[in-house]
Length: 363
Image (cartoon, rainbow, N blue to C red; front, side, top):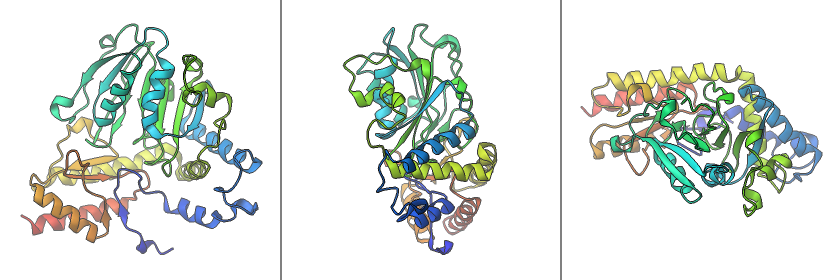
């Protein structure tokens, strides 16, 4: 494939995938590893697929330094289903949970948890349009809470936690859907991590759950079997037919990341991309980023011109220039450049070049 045929896709998800991974998948699409069939056609009980899923888990454990007392689960339903599964499984003692609301998805997660127990909103930045991450201390949390939930990166408003809250002995649950694998994270600081695939992992259809083993097995007896983490842990994510092709693609992305030098190497690239874009926006007389500097996301860069019609013009002309999906979320408008792992530095450079040209022509 000629690389010039491809556009730079700044979508918040489903997002770009590494070209090398997709080209390999294309080569193996009809005949995986000489077995005579596609991954999409093979039984999830076959030796071939068991090797695919086990290799994917092994590589993920290596690149994220996942401790041995954590289970890695591949589940369907995306991050949204985890809004329900987390409280269903973890509200086991006090039936209380603390949530920090820093954006739309954190707000939705808290609303879903209220169906299953008592939810305390410890902090929220909603009154300031989610333009910053509130600072919380250990003493701010409910002493007998069953868990604390955070959304580490917020795709819509372009914010990211600059710190990991200290919750003491209370398990910390984190939605890493839009930042997993982008920078180093100490898994041992969390009781449970979940992440939808369609940002940095692979195509939509699977969610990763990394859960400490002592948190498994406490779901109520009337919990639907698929919504019980124990079901998936006991069956190595093969209780039913999993999204086989999505898992295969995730595994290929993990291999690709290892070849690049792992998460430390990826983080270095991501910080460079984000710094380039934020530095230009901050120096510009046309564009503005509304997010507090220390809370700015590495993955989702939001910006505006201050004029709705000019924002729309920018998005339209950018698409014509091969820079796609730069519109902000429909709830807030403006622009958003999602620069996930697969977005090359050249893509950000091309965007900045276009932004400079647009600024010069629209003073």
